[in-house]
Image 1 (cartoon, helix red, strand yellow):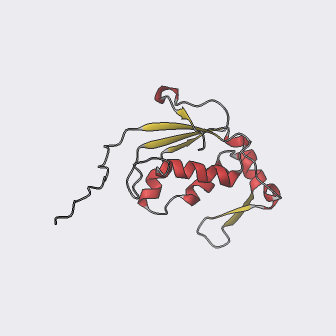
Image 2 (spheres, one colour):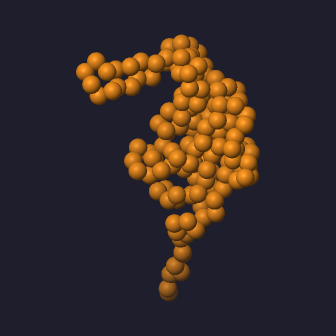
Image 3 (cartoon, one colour):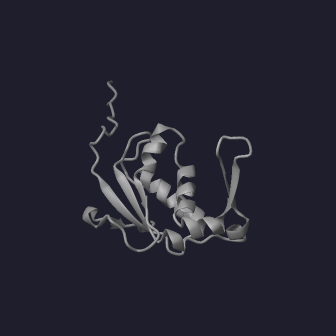
Length: 148
């Protein structure tokens, strides 16, 4: 008796259609918003999800300045950067970062949840952040994100 072979689907490069998602970060918690955005850009919400394959999903994040954090993170959370020179360590509190660059905290959170290799760097370019309601991607007709 011959066993029936089951064919599995493996998407080819650029065979999947390009889709744009509009994510409103207004009054969302920083970490939860970052997991939603990283899941979308990785393609985990798509039925054709395959690890390591670009799924042609782009995310437009609006209202990044209205993101919120729980507890005392606004004053206690610290971001570090180093110039590479001795004594070149810089500290920035979340509150100061939100005042200077309102999209940077969300960008860092999303990038931390993506793979740390060339695939992840490519995915980082597929997320566009805007501090307010206005964005430049009306021509792509992004679909409003709804969880579920």
